[in-house]
Image (cartoon, rainbow, N blue to C red; front, side, top):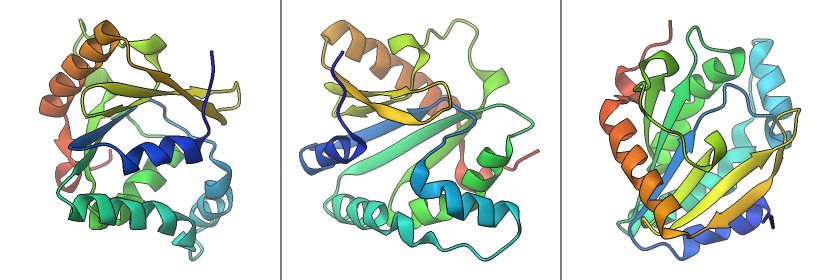
Amino acid sequence: MELISSAERNQLFESFERDAFHLELRDDYSVPDEDSPFTSWLRGENVDYSYMAPWTRLIRRVTSEGRTVRRVRVVTEPPSPYIRWEHATTHLNEEAGEDIRWLPRHLLPADAALPVGGNDWWLFDDRLLAVGHFDNDGRVLGSELVDAPETVAACVRLRDRLWAAAVPHRDYHLS
């Protein structure tokens, strides 16, 4: 399996035409750029969110061009400290133009199969997947590009089902 870097995956935002959708299934992400801000947040210190600037600039630009960027975060309740932090910072993503919804893991439909090995994925224009792969410590290894029609179709069906079931960020309150 060939993996592309996060930077190479982000280049896909330059070429999608209508919709980019992210399914997040993990309760913790060990992203090196976030280690220091997350630790500061845990300590109740001021957090420097400048590490998010490249992402929010990208999202502002693509959404200002009429394209949509959405994500559903499937989370365990009670939430992990990382999910609490993610919830507290989601307004930065939304201010940039993302539409984010939350789905408590226990509300996942019992018959909902998770394609691509239960990994997170980005779906671009219902035709291309960037499937996230992580090491045992939760660090991102990279993304696998998948365009197999049956796999993409399974992800489109799941996206539509979970999007309809998930709670918009403004209405989701952590327990």
